[in-house]
Image (cartoon, rainbow, N blue to C red; front, side, top):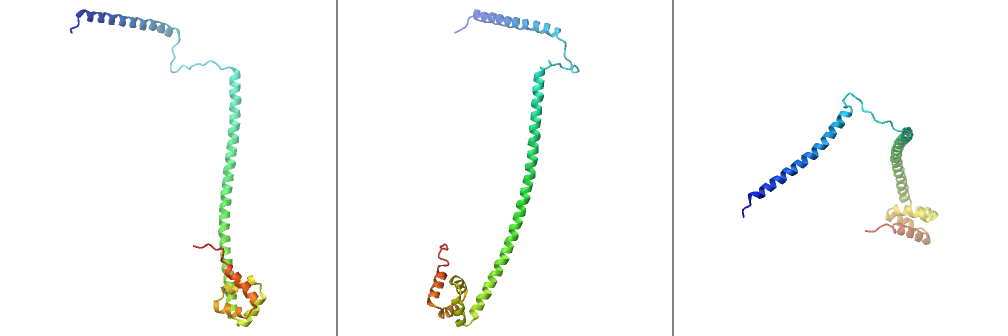
Length: 187
């Protein structure tokens, strides 16, 4: 279908009316803006801007608030400094304790080594004794104490010493030696 030329003319007229209406609306606001601009002094870069003075109560309230905030900030800074000092002291104390613990471990190792050496030497002495003399000596000892030495001795020397002892005492010592590792974990 072919459009009639009169349809284009109507569209053109409508477009012109809408454009004219928009120009009139824009133009009316421009005149008022120009009139207002001439009435106010122009601001330059050198001219200071003036703000209305705030109410005195607001200024006082802001000053009080600022002083409170400053006081809190000072208190917080003091606490932070105290915490930093405390942290440094705690760190130093931990380092001292760690050094003391290491020193104590070394001392305990030396003492344990010395005690073990003494026990080994005394066990060797008991093993070197005549079985009759060793039996008399172990018969006089408390069963717990005798069990410790007899358990460390070679089986032959321990058997020879136990052969000369009272059977009730040998039984008590045997129970102690057998039960020594009863509570140890098993694989």
